[in-house]
Structures are given as structure tokens and as C-alpha cells.
Image (cartoon, rainbow, N blue to C red; front, side, top):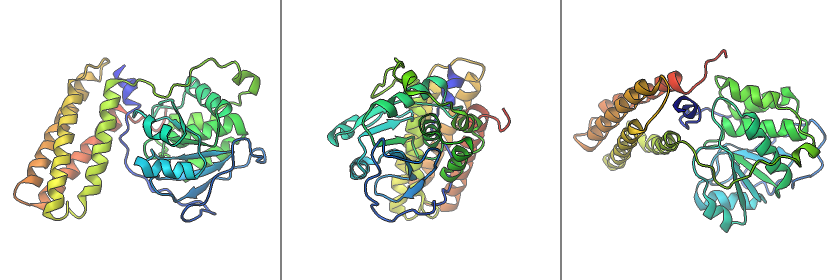
Length: 322
């Protein structure tokens, strides 16, 4: 269903994540292996600053959580941490080739912004219980779905309290509007080992996702690149040329997204919004590629991102009060 798929889209505003006390600089060394003795109910989350990864925290119990590994450096860093199994809850197809080259196993359990869900939790618990650790659980930026999934696993397997799970989501910067993520992370029930042994759910390296979700994942990555290229009103002319190419690709991605079939009452309204976003991105590309007017380009970019936020509130982000 279109609306269900929209709950899994990967377009969020960046949130600052405060560094947890005890965070180390540089490469802090491997985390404790899976099964290392940890006092029941403890929450030992600490922030790690390592190359190729963002928003990384060590939660204890052989669990790491953060953003999607960026290229070879991200997987190099995971290998340096001793990670053996990578669990993605993002909609993007995992980088299986790089993971395999680094001797790691991927498990792909995509979830949406509306919650972790019982079936996903069962697979996550099975993966962390039966595959070799340490484990790295990630979404795209490591702020919302990944932390919620990690907290649910810690609740289910390591006896975190609801208060500890909630406190961790605050540290991770998980948006309180995603009430389903907060609910499922704090309410995840314990699953005894004998029940986990009976879970027949598969643990696939990659899981198909809806076409619209795939398209929005691509939009998110291109928009992130455009933000980084933006600089001070899109910087000097050389940067504006690169930004114009990104805006052009965004325009095409939005147009392709608008052509995808969707069901449900939101279909026509959503397609209209995607078409409008495509037109705005195309206009921005023209401004950046033509006579330089940084102020005009900045204004177009602001209107464009405000339109994205309105669309998210309408079609993706759940209400603050469920």
C-alpha cells in the first residue's frame, strides 16, 4: 500500500546528537564480543567517533548502532571494531559486496517510521541471538529507526528497562514525533531463548522494498549530497555547477517517483506533490547553472525543502498523538 510505504521513506531533517559521557576519540578499539558479561538492565551507551560512520554508539552487549557505512572506510571501521554481523533496518539495498570482503554477514530487516513491529522484532532477536557478533545495527543516518531497533533488541534480549530504552532514544536524537518507534522500543517484550530457537522467520541478506520507497531512498541520498554541496548560498561557481547537476538528478528522481503506481486515498495528492518538487528542483538547477544569483537559489532551495517537510507531515510522519 502506498501509505504504508511512505511510512518507510528515508527523508528526515538532521537532528543534533549530544555526545554521551565517556565517549572516546579516534578509534576506541573493538567492542566487547557477543555474550560478554554485562550486568542485567545496564545501559552503557557511549558515543564513538570513527571514520566512515556517523552517529555511532556502543550500547554494550556486543551491540553497536549508527548510520549506514559510507564506502570502504565505513566497513574498515566496522572491521576494526570487530563487527561480524551488520543488521540494516533501512530501505536501501545493503552493500553486500563490501560486507563480504570484510568477512561480515548482512541481515536486512527494513522497518518504517511507524514502528518496529512484531515480525521485525522477531527477526532482529533471532539475528542477534544466533549469528556471530559483535553486531552493528543501522538505518540511514543512525537517528531514528536504527536506534529504535537497537533499543527493542536490548529490551528483548538484555533486559533494558523501558526508562533506559527511552533515555537512549533521547541520546540518539530519535524524533519524538515518531511515536511508533518510541512505543515499540520501550514496550518490546522479552523473548526467552527457547522461543527464539523456534522462530522460523528467515534472515535475508537483502529484502525487496516497495518501488516508491526505493525511489525515496535515492532522493534522500541525492538531497543529502546537495545539502553538503550547498555551502554558503551554494558557494563559488564551481560548486554551483556540481550542485546544479545534483538538483537535476533530484528533479528526475521526483518525476520518476510521481509515475509509480500507488493505491489509497493519498495517491493523487502525493503524485501532485512529487511533480511540484520535480519542478522546483529543475528550477533550482537552472538558477545554479545560469547567471549566478545565490540569494535567488537559496530562496528556491528553502521553498523546496519546506515543501518536502509539508509532504512528510501529510503522508509520512505519524501524528504526535496517536
